[in-house]
Image 1 (cartoon, rainbow, N blue to C red):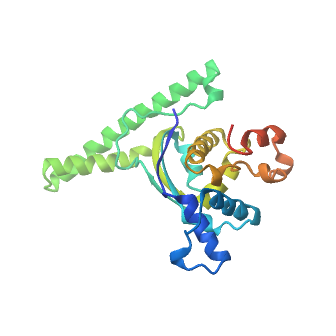
Image 2 (tube, one colour; image 1 turned 45 degrees about the vertical axis):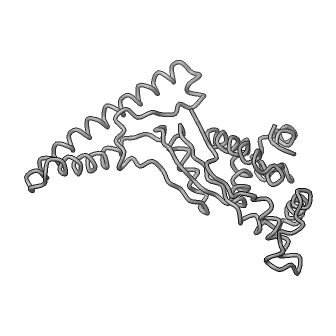
Image 3 (cartoon, rainbow, N blue to C red; image 1 turned 90 degrees about the vertical axis):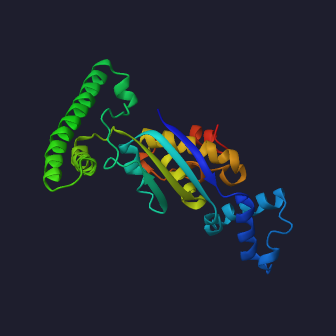
Length: 255
């Protein structure tokens, strides 16, 4: 099951953005840029930036998330958002003898498809363990012959064995990932990934992330969501056709 947690975020982030914006539009000195920035004035600056499309000051704050119970299918899409930092559980260093996996809802809700899917996952587990065992024995014998201690030989043999055995893992394989995005990147992520046309799993992740950031910085993210919340649908002929309900759900805060 997908779990996502907001691990860290820039403290007083909205005020920091407003300070940076104030510097752009006034002759304030660095030591004075935070003076007079009440909650109301801070929100006013944020609204002005949104209206002007001036997003560079938003880059000054960042958010770090931890996600687990997600598939490699999801993380392959997530890392395409390039201006971000990622740390993912390694299949090269972590032995996954009984790996967990994500079952897509359409498969889960179909008895026959679910049965076939689970059988495929069980076979992958068997093949992974079988290949790991074969390669482990081969590498272990070689390292022992080379004169390594038993402890070191076992460690190196296992690492090399799982490094190659992991190639049998499916995209459904569960993984864990920690990632950091600045607020501008995050707004773009929400525009793309909360859209009805986004793949279902990363859309679920994006919506949960949006709920988390709206709790800590409601003024900044109050209108975050799919591209159609601020204009016509960017998907053109491939629109979901449900723009009225989408806007109703996201405009002014996720509902």
